[in-house]
Image 1 (cartoon, rainbow, N blue to C red):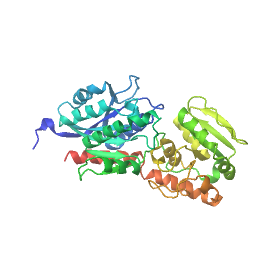
Image 2 (image 1 turned 135 degrees about the horizontal axis):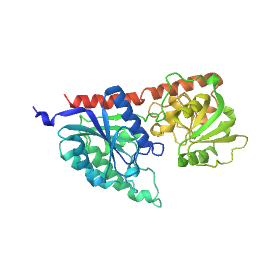
Image 3 (image 1 turned 45 degrees about the vertical axis):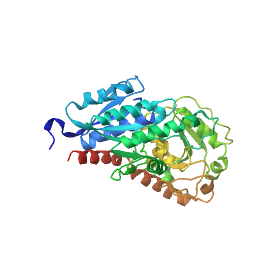
Image 4 (image 1 turned 90 degrees about the vertical axis):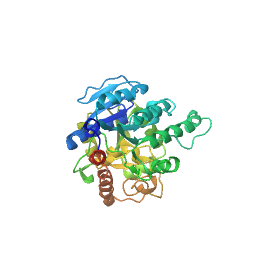
Length: 366
């Protein structure tokens, strides 16, 4: 039996993030909302270790800002004389410009080597696929994969957002059989509604929401989706997010620049709007917090391309529409789409994510 001074405590979690800048970083938004839910529902307190930013965030949670090389000392300063859990939020480009955070992998190895930490890793992103040699990231992909393998093999609990990532981890890492991978699509980082406004009470509008780069990509994709917008009778587009993003020419559809909205007003907009556009394709849309926000508020997501097979519990023409399925959907079916989208998100909302970590931490303490 272990001495009392090295027993595992399941009341404290270290979360490692590249930056702690809510509203500017999807990983930070995810981690902060998770910390709030862990505290409220399970009495688990979070300490953040922030590696790639010195920008301070005023929060009730303690945050330690340090270099990657100092992770082990920062973790030990939090643990004191106990064994505790650590959750690494992994998105390679958040920690390294080339997407291959080699120093992070080494640092996680030193943390694991202390024998004092149970490490969980949530893979928000892996690496870019289908790259051509003239793309800079092509030459970094081998290094990226090596880092991912190292971190996966150092982790006691593996989680990721989409099945495509799960398959890669299974193929490319030497995992212990007792170390399954939990696929948990991202949850809405702007909150959710328990009962959403029926589609009959919503405006024939479409939201384009997110940071500037995401919205620019959305408007580029919308150039090829004008027939879908006309088929669905969309009258206007609500552009929500920081900065001014000039849309591509979309004849007959006005664009209203709404700017950045508070969470309350954003949810109000989502509750009154029928559609929301996201530039991802179905094979990876489950890792999009924008898509999750639409689903969590009963908005019908629109995607630019279609796949005839389903991914991550999502099927074109059920939880979302594309140019292919928008052609045959009817007004009577719109409520079914909204219901299906909300139910899909509800199966992995922030409460479900927090419960997964809380159960894991409880298991370690037995």
